[in-house]
Image (cartoon, rainbow, N blue to C red; front, side, top):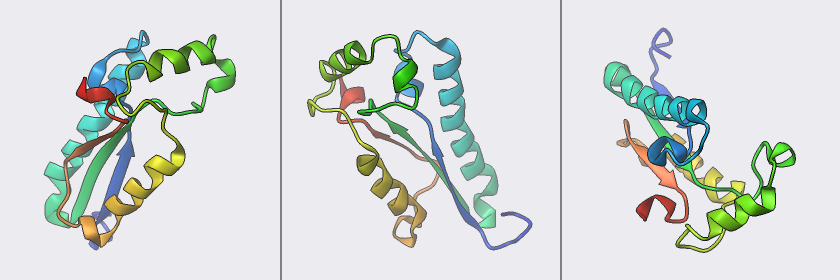
Length: 124
């Protein structure tokens, strides 16, 4: 993007575990926290080149990428539902429009921010 000189938009998908640290997998939550900070770094260091960068932290989704490998997918769902103020798991359809918005010119002044799309999970 810098070489092309036309700016651009970077949207990094992290996870609410970057904000909460609730997963027992320290590598996962640490990596996701690093992604949130990467978006901030890009925003600060490449903003003058017209590059915007933001991150999003989706909350618990109905079906995770590792759903079939999870040792207790139903237990995971029940635990998550007990902590989400909207009382439901998210879907890709809950997340995609927000990414589309951030990529659009309508969000042209948004950079360096992180957005939790989590049904209120991180509010508690």
